[in-house]
Each structure stands twice: as structure tokens, then as C-alpha cells.
Image (cartoon, rainbow, N blue to C red; front, side, top):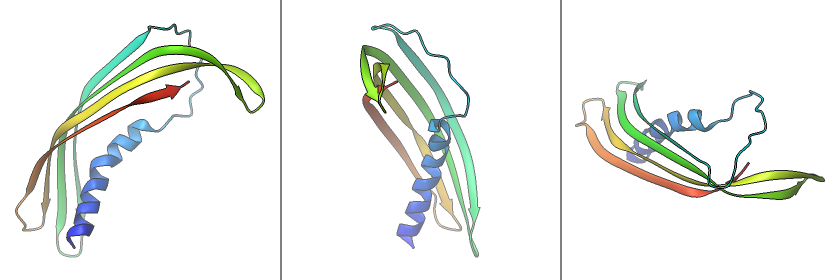
Length: 124
């Protein structure tokens, strides 16, 4: 039961983040970026969710701070499916941290703090 509850809590924590990360169907214009350009995004996210089970309810609350920085590192030509295309190489630095509370039925609430950092390289 603890593993099932833990997996549900993890899913509830990350579902809002997945929705933000999914691409939209909108068409984008080709950007005109240069090496050294960068963008910084930051904000906060607060969410509450509940799930009813047979005789108990799981309630979750999350308050978090999110930051993202994208730096244009280089531009290179890549062969993609037989066509040569200019690609921007970007460095990505991001973090999310915050507090959570989970309450399941009459059990004592579970409180904690989380912090994740994700860094890497993306090609656009």
C-alpha cells in the first residue's frame, strides 16, 4: 500500500510539469538568434489536487518556484532526413524547488521539500 501511495504522490507532483513541457500545435517562425543570446524565465506554481479511493481521499498541495535559462552556444548545419538545416545549439539550465503536503484519509500528513536541477544541451 505504501508503494502504491508513493507512486500516486510522485505522479501528482509531476503531472503539472509534463503539461507545461508538452509542445503546442502552433506554427513557429524561424528565430533569428545569435551566439550569446539568452532568455531567463522564472515564476511560481501552486497546485492542489485530490483523489477519492474506496473509503479515503488523497489530498496534495504543492508550492514551488521554477527557473529556466536558455543560452545560445553555437549554430551548426545538420543533415536531417536528407535536408541541410541550420540548428541552434543551446545550453539549458533549469530548477524547480518547493514544498509539498500529502494527506491520505485519517493518516498524519506527510510534509516535505523537493529540489530538482536539470541542465543540458538542446538543438533547435
